[in-house]
Image (cartoon, rainbow, N blue to C red; front, side, top):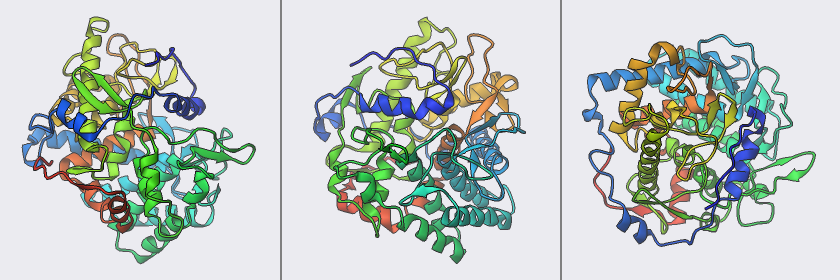
Length: 453
């Protein structure tokens, strides 16, 4: 496998870096599902907790994560367009107006969680959902149903020459579909259908067997494709299940699934941060399901175990890493935004801890991830637990603490916390008939395992 040179990038460059990282991931031989199942145990009681296993302090922590995250999505969004800021100061008010459609997708799902838990009046939440969907139905800039990645939250204007993004549009669609399945308002349902059904997934194939990362009016389609395991599983499910512009189920088989072996764990992965094992699972319930390649939930369990062991191995360099303090995924650093993590080690790892690494893995290694989050809240709370929950990143080995939170990291923490507590996002999103159709056409089947959250 290649070793990646340390790279620190300003925020506008982060998607390009991730695209290049994924595109050049080490291509290891494809192996059968049986290899994965033989070399790593199934989900055990120590890996995932059921709701009844959560202690009162666990329940309180999970609720605090969800409530503080909701504050971000409520306050860091335009009440007119519904667009959510890409990032904000962790302690609240922030004059920046750069938004992202990915953060907006997480934010729409956050509104469902908030309505279910009475964090705000349901009528106000529904009005925010309606305005957001109205914006995307009538005003949002895009091409063939796909939208620009970074936009001004008030004007909707394109920022940083950003691309019309396939993956970020998919994250947005997941939030839109979650709202469609949760709220009873017929206007929400009709607008959600209209937005989803006009996305031309066939166009995004651009004549190939796998989906492009995106398109720019100045240069056309981006040459990188979703052709190797990454966070894109929900993108393909949405594309295959689309009733108007669907792509063939064979596209699911067209992307490569390299097998990585680290710390006694074998799993499908890529040289990319931990979030690639989290994002699709925030909405799609892959538990007790497998296709002809893998059980993807178990795959994320193994990847998370390997990541935890990787961080513990680093404790000889960074003394604060421990069983109660670990986790690195794409985040801010003392030197800018970086895509870092492992195994294998990638990026300028310096002892920084990213709370979203553990929070976004809550359903996979529940006890271990809760231990990290309790530790951060109890022992680093004054320093790095603010209005919107934990800061995006901090270094416990020195004084560096990120003053910001980043919307997609806040989002994955909130959605996975909600899934741990009640499987709410899974149960809501999986009502979508298009997802069931797509999974059926691909050939997903039950694993017959009894271990469930």
